[in-house]
Picture (tube, helix red, strand yellow):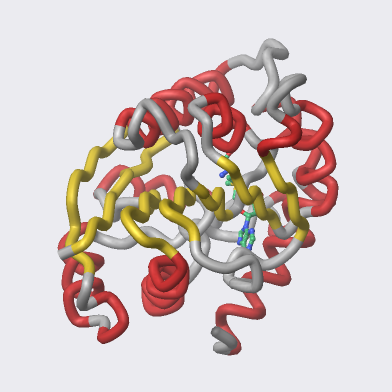
Length: 232
Ligand SMILES: C[S@@+](CC[C@H](N)C(=O)[O-])C[C@H]1O[C@@H](n2cnc3c(N)ncnc32)[C@H](O)[C@@H]1O
């Protein structure tokens, strides 16, 4: 996939997650104490990760799983603990290195870390794809195409999160625009669940799939919604 909006956003995200935000991200994903807004974000992220994990089989032995946009590796570790062979991919080489360092002893051999684009399909088919808070930065058309590309590699299940368009999120988004540009993360692009479902239903490459479970997590400053695609 190579739309101009996709590559421009991907490049901005690489700079952001590999340089601007890498220390903050390393801290948020560790046990280090964080306060205020960050603590609510961490709690919300823990809860959506648990939701995603609860939708995966408890035994993944013999399966291949792609963690698309793995960040510091938290989901990848949990999937490998269940027996999956995990392909953990992220644009940020620094985060991939951190994830590899943090991989629990004994699991490192089960996880293949790769710095690069999650849409690079060169490693072939997988059973399942998870993508937590990684496609939320792309325009809805690009986001759904990314999901379609990821689904084309998956045999059984694709789980991703999106930023649901809610009145609260719209206000927070507007407030965020008031901060100086240099402090801002590449914007999250909220999308309503209805709009997303329509796009998924209409996408020619997603005809073999249907929406399964979906669950919204609302932890004050963190709002995200997990959605599952299963075989139709
Ligand atoms: C908000 S972080 C989430 C990381 C991780 N999934 C988690 O929840 O801890 C989003 C991550 O997606 C990665 N990302 C965004 N677009 C990507 C792409 N096209 N290919 C690979 N990684 C991507 C970013 O580099 C970043 O590490």
